[in-house]
Length: 75
Ligand SMILES: [Zn+2]
Image 1 (tube, rainbow, N blue to C red):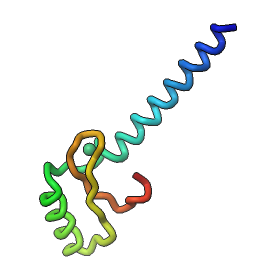
Image 2 (image 1 turned 180 degrees about the horizontal axis):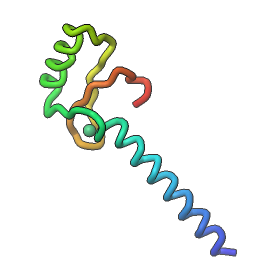
Image 3 (image 1 turned 90 degrees about the vertical axis):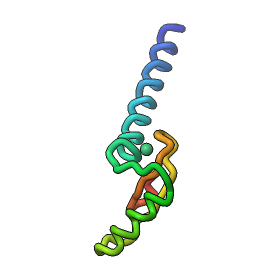
Image 4 (image 1 turned 120 degrees about the vertical axis):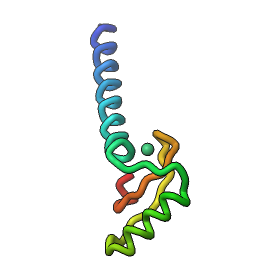
């Protein structure tokens, strides 16, 4: 009996690790990284200058850097 619960628990942990990895890829590893907010904002200004609007800057909890996102509600 214990065995079934242990397996179920392991399965849940793996699913949650996969989910975490996917989030990380999407929110961090697939994006440009900036070392500071100022650098990220400079790039945001450049993007807006080039017609790409609606971006925002956010501090990344994974790499401790900064990224730009066009969908802050997704993160
Ligand atoms: Zn990051």
